[in-house]
Length: 489
Image (cartoon, rainbow, N blue to C red; front, side, top):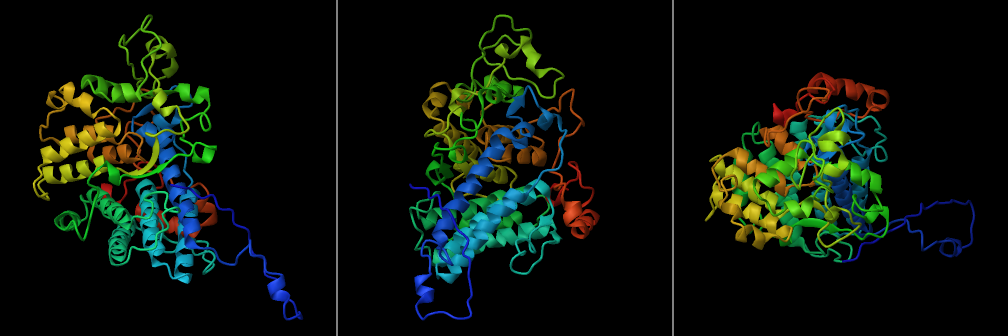
């Protein structure tokens, strides 16, 4: 598929008191149109959303607090010495989507309104999953209404609105999904059915996440599962919502590749002890795909194995196990600007399998011809297939190993889901804070004994939006990384 890179020029409208009858036509610049077509913004909205989500997953807080990586230098992320985090990039993406939808309305192309709603829901859900309460219903109105100080919405209200938005988008595309430009659609090449599957699968993600406090969560999940024609969901890896990397410049290259990460930065990014230990204990064939063996086992002081993960929040992590030559970095699989296997993912099929497995395991829903055990197996198998080791898992007897064979516990299920969700947004962290699994440890040099549950609101908010910020604190609670949001209470 082709990705478009569109440059927009501002149109300056000049009004004169007198002119010749042909002046307007003569002075119209066709290369600087007053309106643009929505498909141009469609590509931008998709790629910016996917690339930002993936970059966030690979070398930012989510990768460290989700315990996939250990940073041996500049490790404030994993010691929880967090400062406030800015959210402007998410709102910028939301503004691109809103502009696309306005153009779609003007040009009578409702399919871009519907797909735009799915992208908007994805971005706004990620926003509230990270910060909790946030500007939503009054956001993006600075141009239309002059409101530059939007009120904060409660997370519960945001979630209910987004769940309905996704449901409506599915119905809109079901009724009329024609007209998506395949060349502009960097996600699904114009296939409306795939967009519908994404909308409904995202609903499953959200419903499980808020199921502790939302009474209708499992009822709505069951409604989706019971009607595959009305509510299609992911059923294989071919449904994965992923964007390829072009590898031409930093902005369209994998975050761990040479164009984005210098050698020293990649070298300081070690595989975490949690990740390596769990993989080694299960003789997991994904280990060799994801993790590089140590440069040398001679001189190792703590762990003499071929693969050695580094614990978190140590006083001198670079010295662990006798130094960095005795520590595993991520494999060369992640040291590329682009490859067939490296894509920017919004959601993948294995996640859907594990969502359903957990819901069935809890006894809250049923899935025709499936059990929690079979769905659990489907999730693992889909992940193995994704990384090209499906046959190895079978030949090595992976599924019959005591730690892998289904035992009916949430702990086992979430560990496998955590593995399958390696570097997928903040999903590893979100599942841990929701379930407590895998059972991570903070580390000796951590600034607090518990894991953060949110980002702090941007530092600028008390200055530029004080009244709304103050009102939000009075409802939400203290603006720190330990205040639980609605669905975690």
